[in-house]
Every structure is written in C-alpha cells, then in structure tokens.
Length: 134
Image 1 (cartoon, rainbow, N blue to C red):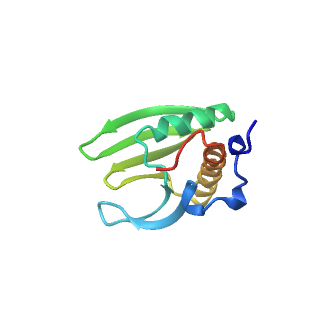
Image 2 (image 1 turned 45 degrees about the vertical axis):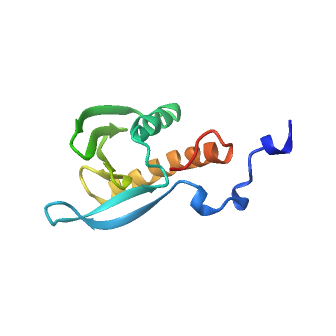
C-alpha cells in the first residue's frame, strides 16, 4: 500500500474540507423563531438517504413518514427512535437543515447526538477519500 492510499489524519485536514454542522436559532417562513441544525459541505440531494443508511447501520430505528418535493425545496418527515423530525433540503444554495417536530430541550439534545453520529461517519469517509464534501 502506498502512502498516498492511507487516510489523512483528521488533525492534518483543513476544516473546510470536512462536513460539519451548526445549531442556530433561525426564523421560519412564518416569522416564528426555531432551533435548527444545518449541515455544511454536504449539499448532495440524496444526503437524507445517505444519512438514513448510516443511522440504520448504527442501529437507529428510522421510519420515513412522508416526502414532499417542492419547486426548490425537498422535505422529509421521519422518525428516528420514535422522535419525529423534519429534514429540509434547499437547492440554491445547496443546504440541509434538520429540526425536531416538537422543539423541547430533550429533543434538541437527542437530535444533536444523532447528527454527531452521521457527521463522524461522513468525515471518516471524507478522510478515507471515499466521499467528497460538497
């Protein structure tokens, strides 16, 4: 195996080359404020399916409730371990944001832990050069 085939240690990777999230208090389309988790550097349209498969591989129970494909936004309503969440994808600029259907501190904490699981796995795949941030 050549040294170029080995994964790059995380400390040596520019943070802009990884997938990350932030938790922000944002205004929805009706003017109401809410907490949401936004994924950065992972603008693929099939990101929900990809992340759903990661959660399933880690033993989480995922149930897709419904899916809506609007003009410039796709919306997945799903349950993860019994907690209903909403996943939005806006295509320009490409971004994903996820929020619990019922905003409580407990649900926000759970969702944040679920997001950390997918990000750790996605970034492992980035470091191994199996996927590219976008």
